[in-house]
Length: 95
Image (tube, rainbow, N blue to C red; front, side, top):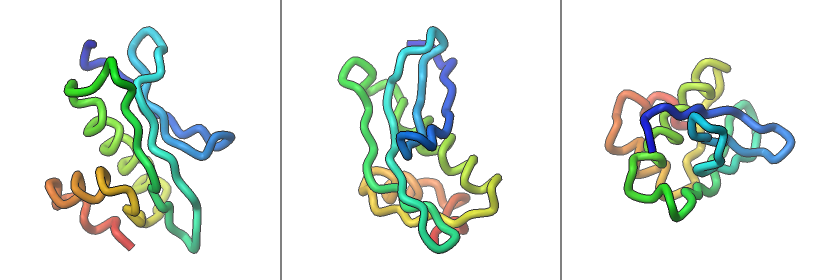
């Protein structure tokens, strides 16, 4: 997999999705909106993309979009919580 991925918000499915440059779904992070925050509840990276940094790019892309919308984040997903702990420049988003 190349480093060219796109993270988009899919409101219909209530998740952020990461896709490869050829449009394949590589993973997603489910969310719930509540009280001016987005609760990230569960993250999935498809098996064929494991170990390629997809989860980190997904977390960063989702959090960047949440920040751009002026929202806070509730990291209920253990993966996202660990990722934020390793990237303190995102700690200010935590509600």
